[in-house]
Structures are given as structure tokens and as C-alpha cells.
Amino acid sequence: MSDDPWVVAICYPREWWSEPGAFDAAVARLEATATPDGRPVEVVVAAYEESHDRRRERGIDALRDWPATQPEISDDAAAAFARMHTALALDLPADIATRAPNLAWVQAFGAGSDQFVSCHFGDHDVRLTSSAGSNAVGIAEFALGRLLEHRKLFPLIRELQQAENWQARFGSELAGTTLGLIGFGNICEAIAVRARAFDMRVVACRQSARPGDTHELLDGVYASSELNNMLGECDAVIAAVPDAPSTREMINADSLAAMKPGAFFCNVGRGSLVDEPALIASLEAGHLSGAALDVASGEPLEPGHQLWTAPNLSLSFHNAAVPAAMFANVHAIYAENLANFVNGTPLRNLVTP
Image (cartoon, rainbow, N blue to C red; front, side):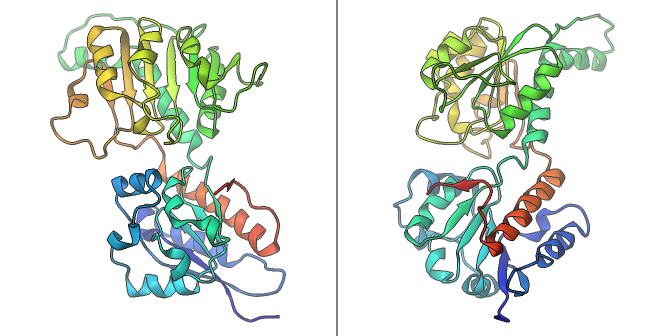
């Protein structure tokens, strides 16, 4: 039996936790993991963070010389990398496989993991898992909140209140309307559960769909090639898909024109999904009655961008998730996977390199 510990690295800043003591409690849970060989679990903090734009670009162009331009790595982080067997990380240096000779498994902090493509884990026998599902409920609630806000005329009612203008304005019901989902991962599944509670008809377009596919939460399943057919029957559309070549600008002039006149569109996935000038043109023409974006093609959105002033568009700032719940959920998945890892059982949310 070896006395050498299993070294677990937390590779994001502990300051991200807003609840006092929550980070320490999460670390204690990891350190309490029972190992079959009796080796202790040692948790180290190796904070490493990159910009949103760099993270996205790493997912698009994995062959660029990313190590040449990566942020400075602290001595503490470098020492932790050299010892770690597994890491929970939003970002890691592109050359992490050489910096961490013991590394066998990385769990991505979020549902997306494209930024790790440039680490070439497949060439180094390093497994990769995601935290898919960790923020699904919070984002689903946010997206449906935007839809309710739009259908119930909440912004207009607020404006009338602020103007001290007593005018009764009436919204419309969700019951009986059709909601279309682009993608059907954890977030859209959580949206479907809640939309059905409003007596909505729910359909979804998913890349993996095959003719004849059904789902207990859905009234219809469409393949990617049938996207425009689905859009034409929807009163509202919510999208939550990862950034990928097949999804970039999937919502464009053609797909927007295919939507029902007066439809509402919401994106809580990745900004690359939307051709933003085409969306603005559709709103200006009145074809869409409204839209909500929690993400943009470039973040943060620069001052003067047309999205700020587009008519009937509600913007938020990549904040649909609920961090307090998400952090706890991420660490619950990681704790479960750590037990799987040290026991040699299959990992949850395994990502194919």
C-alpha cells in the first residue's frame, strides 16, 4: 500500500465562491473520499484563469501555438500541476500534459469543454469529463422568466408605473402555445419540464435526432436538417447549444425568416449560435416580437454595439446561471467522479476527445 496521496487540484480561484466557508466544505468532502488502497486524498489549489475570448478561440483553433502566449503561471500553481493526478478546472495551460506528468483525468468546470481541445488529452491518455447539468435548473428558470416577462408585458407595465400612468395592459397566456427548443441537453430538458407545467406544447431540434424519435417530455423531435420546419410552428424558441462548427450562426436570416411572425427568441447557450445583425434586422422589421440574449458573439459586449439598442431585445450578461447552486452541483459531480476515479469505475459525463 502506497502512502503517496491522490493529489486533487482545484484550478479556479477560490474567491469565486460567494458563500463563506462553502469552498472549505467542498474541499473537505473531496479529502474524505474513501480510496480502496487507503491512500489519502490531498487537495491543492492551483488557480489558473484565461479570458473568455481566449477560451473560445482555443476551442476553435486547437493547433495554434497556445503555450507561447499563455498567462503567467504562479510558482504555487506550477508545483501543484507537477504533482496532481486530477483537476477541476475552467482553464488549464495548453501544455498541461507535460507540466503534469501524473495527470490522468480532468473535469471541466462547466458543461462545455471545447477549450481543452488544445491540451490534446487524447494524445496523453488523459480522460476528460464535463459538469453537464450543474447549472441546468437555474438557466431553465431564467429562460422561462424571460419568456414570461415578454408574454406578460412586464417591461411595459414597469414603464407605466415609473411614469405614474394608470393604464391596464394585458399580456397573453403560455398555455396552449408551442415552445421550440434548439438542443436537448440538460438545460433544455429542464426547460421542457417547466414549460409543460405551463401547459405548453414542447418540441425540440437536436443534432442526434433520427426519423421516428420520440421523448416523453416532447410533442415532437426534429433533426438539424428540419430546424426551419420546427421554427415555423413555434410561438417561442429557446436555444441552449454548445459552440461548434455545426452550430455557428445556425440562427441566421433564413432561420429567422422561418419563424412565426410575432415569435419570441431566447439564447442561453453560446453567442456564436446567432447571426447578430440578422437578429437585429428581424427585430427592427417587427418579424420577431421580442428576443432575449444572455450571451453574445463577443463578451463583454463593447459600448456602442447595436445589440444594446436593438428594439424589443432584453440583454443579460452571461449571468443566467445561479453560481451558489452551480458551484455546489459542480463539486457534487466532481466528488462522485473522484470516488469513481480512485475506485476504477466509469466516470460520469465522459467527453470523447
